[in-house]
Image 1 (cartoon, rainbow, N blue to C red):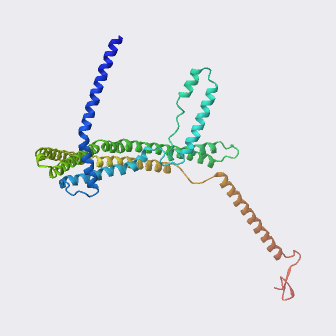
Image 2: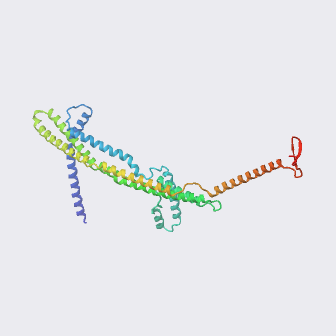
Length: 364
């Protein structure tokens, strides 16, 4: 491209920009008086300095109230249900876990970087994603700690491990599995709530409801312009009445049209509100989560024997009982022996003594 061509294009673009700026400036200067009058009128109404305010139809006022109520309902719900978008809402301790994982990841990358042989390898290490970790939820935390506890018990030396220890480790492993499954059910519930409730409410807020709010704003602006025109006409000099009346009538038509348009938009928003259907999806998500979780826990309880029947304990109890029985037998034998001693009669005595008189058998 030659310098002349460049200069010609630059000049053309500059002229177009200047024309556009001039047009915008002209529009602004034309609208400034109107904007100033509208703003002044609005302030006067807020302060109660004017009372001749055009009244809107009762139907329109009722629709406005319903739209405001629907919007507030959406906003209030989202203030609460956005909780389901925070994976760790039932596990406040996740912050500590996250810090620990971050420290481990940093330490791992530092170790890997120390073995990097060139800049490319170092860059790949830095941009590589961290190791995938389990979600930070209460159920996953329970699953993790149960698994660790099961492993600890299984590591007991065989010399001191009992069948009851093996049974406990197995049940803890089963508990870990069921908690992991419940955690998955909760995450599925959260996903449904995020996509079929929160997302829909937000779309309506920034879509149809926002459109209704813009239509209402337009009605308010047209009403202000009309009321300003009425006021100007009332205070006008005779020679300006004709032109001001034309302006007022045109603004009156615009006000009426804007009101009708806004009424139709608000009616459509209320008629097509998906709140009830969204709420049903929310309820189904929770029902599915609670039912599946309850069934999983019921199955876990029914399939495991939680009774303590340690063989070593039973053996100790048996030994104690045997010792007690032996002692009782020894005591009984000793008592019998003492009685025999008390009743022992000399073999060479063939007579008994009665009343101090020695009698023979024959005498008796």
